[in-house]
Image (cartoon, rainbow, N blue to C red; front, side, top):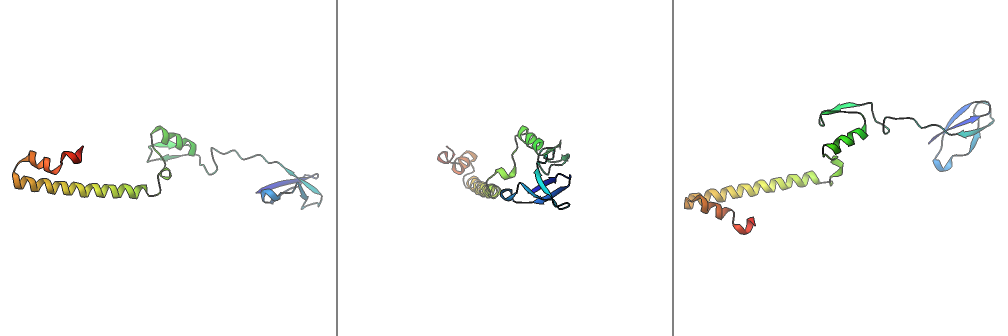
Length: 135
């Protein structure tokens, strides 16, 4: 972290130290006298570090002021971040969709074959979708 030190002459020196290794004072780089650590004021940001002054988010259809505002908009719309899903959520959804499509195609084939064989729509439906599978 960067720390500021000031000597009695008013010279300010900035030094980088690990938090655990910051000394209470150093020698001033200008006059060589003792310079004590001074507490700096944190910068005021719009919300979090890295937040911008705002932008229009097309996917949300609204102006976003900062990341906290975006989280409120997402919550209000009932949406969640992609990172909140399990790692392979999208892959699982695609696999499930493919499996559903394959089952649908099998049902259509079985239904059409039953109509061709018996000519009865009710019987074809009952053979394609047995009660045990539906209930």
